Image (cartoon, rainbow, N blue to C red; front, side, top):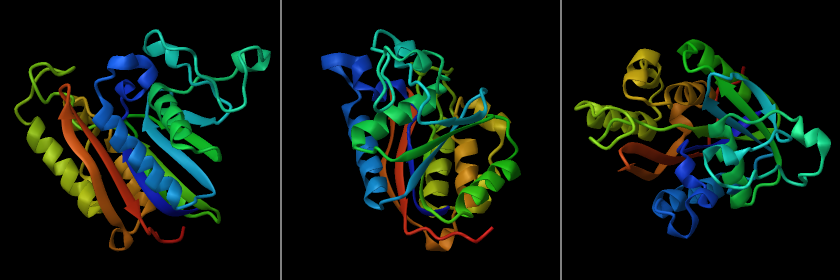
Length: 245
């Protein structure tokens, strides 16, 4: 697959309107995420490969259940064309939460094409993550690469994680890496450091580093702000052409 465009959006349940109802408070983040996804879809990929960190590492396809009711009170949204009465659906695997969020938002953005979901272990070595990115880049079909992850979740005293004074510096460094598509800097990220910040963006970024050629990527940052104590990013990288592998 030749990567024609890559996108980064948050791995955040607050992006699912069904969970927030009429008072959904993350509308600015959601709008940025949907704008990012629509930019990805405008490149008309044949397939979208979605990547996120999760301990349930493995590959999932578009028949997997979203099961968003896990996040509280929302209906168990189903893949395109499925109905709750289908017995085989109840036996289908459930997407890890970040991949389920991606599936729902892709659907909301209008995508109905072929989708492959990949959960990668949060402790996966950077070289292996980059190798997976190289595999995504190395095929024949045009591919959109969708990466799910957040920066530090330790930005304020009200953050999900304990407040860290170095969170702002961590987020600024992440933003610079993404804006510059800095492969070398991305590969310096470690699982331990990201775990301290409660960030789950390292592995997806290292996949990106293996899938793109920095000199060919035009990066647009659509959102980069702290919300509810977590640093959320939305970015789009167009006109990508990586090395063949």
